[in-house]
Image (cartoon, rainbow, N blue to C red; front, side, top):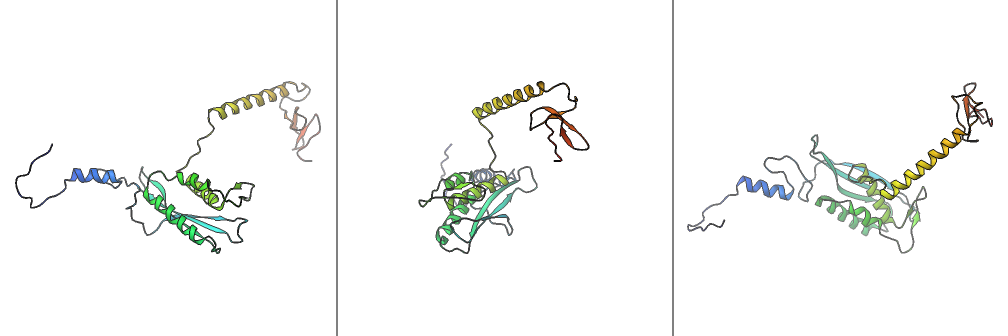
Length: 231
């Protein structure tokens, strides 16, 4: 409710309740709460926990080293949270120096802003090199060097718990259940078709699919086909 002031204002102050509400809305701890949230005015501590990832690509003879430093919010409490705070990329190759510095500064600014920063992963991974991508060690295709930096960021966010696997969707779960049922049906049929001449404790032989594998002279041996783990 509005109140008219007839006298001259000589001083003013902010009530504690209003200040606490403003601080809480801004993401800083207010009266009655000790929970600290990530926001751009949060000062950098003297020490941060960090992880460095090595990126070796066929695009350059020199590797890139991506360092992501994290800040621990509300340590040793039930509200403890590890959040990325800054990113650095170093390399002997100076060809990409300008855009690498720009990328790390923008990413670091987004980290310190707070909120959901996981969108950066898809933004980086969707960058394609017009000259074509490459296959990294292990056979995984990378459409660009920027995309591999996004892949590194995803690994880091999963490590600190900001990204979690959603698991298979309903269609994938149904397919897995069908495949599991089909497999169990096949195994049961093979076990039932095994001859009764073999001991009851025999297990299924992977070579002849007969339940005839027993421990013989301290070695698993199939009484049907002769397959032996000891050669």
